[in-house]
Amino acid sequence: MKKIGVNIDLNLQEILRELLEAEFYSIDSVISYDLESIDVVIIDLKYEINDNKIHFFSRKNIPVMLLCSRDDDFRRIKGYFKRKEIYDCIYRDDYFEIERSLRELFSNKKILKNIKEIVINDTFYRAIVKIDDIIYLDYCRITRKTEITTKNGKIYCVKRGFSEVEDKLRILECFIKLDRGTLINKNLLKEIDYKNERVTFVGDNWLSVSRTKLKILEENLDLFGNRIEL
Image 1 (cartoon, rainbow, N blue to C red):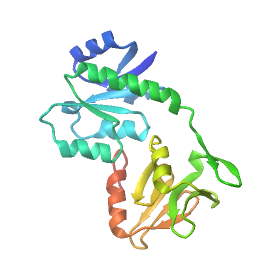
Image 2: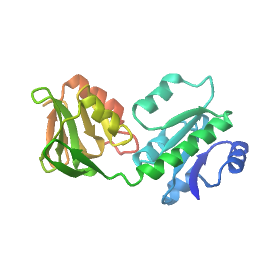
Image 3: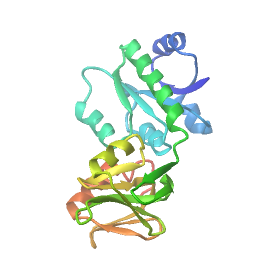
Image 4: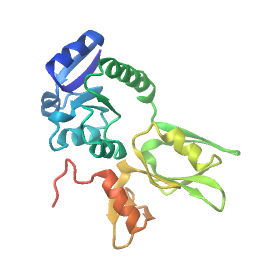
């Protein structure tokens, strides 16, 4: 049975109980007791004052569905999507769209839960690479191939174009776009260095990045959300 964390009106919760076979938990209980294997959380924007709960669950890679009204701040909602903190936003009175979105999510999660590796299928070799080992992917204009760089410094070349690789990896939340030809693994990012204009990853591999792009990256990552700033 699916487990859903909720911070919504009670009448909507009762409607969802009738539509879905699921267990419902209050958001506060999920945060306090760190319940395992929660499948999704549904948060009504009118109860989310400072974004802390959205930050909390997105950091744990738990899908967040946001409920809103037709009068809510579009820019605020757009920011959540841009930072990949929510997977969907639906009007709170559109019960059947909420149900449809949840069923689609549950169906996709069955497929995605087991994806932990990629297979590089190049002309002369095959390689199995753990997703957690990939620090970034970028397009090489010289070879006209997409290069995949791992934590140990090994570089794999893929004959597919960058846009095709990007489309295939879009389902993985760990990769974010740095520029038109670079994807980075946000889970392995260690430092953003404005002085030397670069980002450093776990394993001390680094990538040169302009200050403008570093600023955009920092905004998209929301570094200070759910963290103590010193």
